[in-house]
Image 1 (cartoon, rainbow, N blue to C red):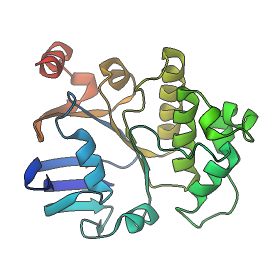
Image 2: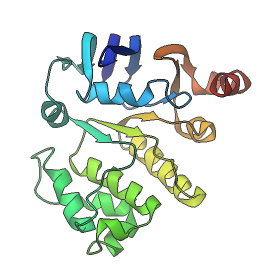
Image 3: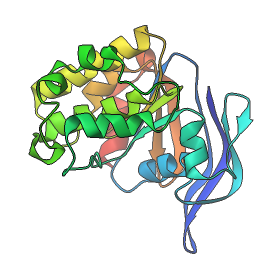
Length: 229
């Protein structure tokens, strides 16, 4: 589904990503883990065309997208939930979800599946996004991305600042989405969450991939050492 090869990314003159190779297979959940500031979010922004990536390859299915604009990548089927969620606080829950439909012109109506996954959003459809709790805003951000029927869902730190009960709900939704055939790529620091949901993992340090493997085979103590260095 998503294949990244020898990718380099820059902020100004500073290189942030160094020859990154990473794959997200179809209908799998892949997590990228690492400490703060190692380049994880930059990788997601690179996938979305938000930072300079002068060399390397980003393929979505059979399509090379590294030189394509951000809107094209979204239209090609990347549903992106950035760190901090970025919902529209003055708009209602319903209006936020309707904006998600603009990413893909398949339908003009919100799939009832969205409300099945996130029943709280149906109850609060007329509430302003800014009036929701942090966990509810995260659910809204994920739902808005799903409204566009993406081929791959990309989440940046979905558990950040979220209470444990909502983390469990989000984890359950992600596993349900996989069962429905979705492909999901997540940047995350909460190792227990990764162990619970992911099929495969990558570890990043200083802009480079330093470890990878099936989550079922993960040496948890070794990964914890890498995350705490």
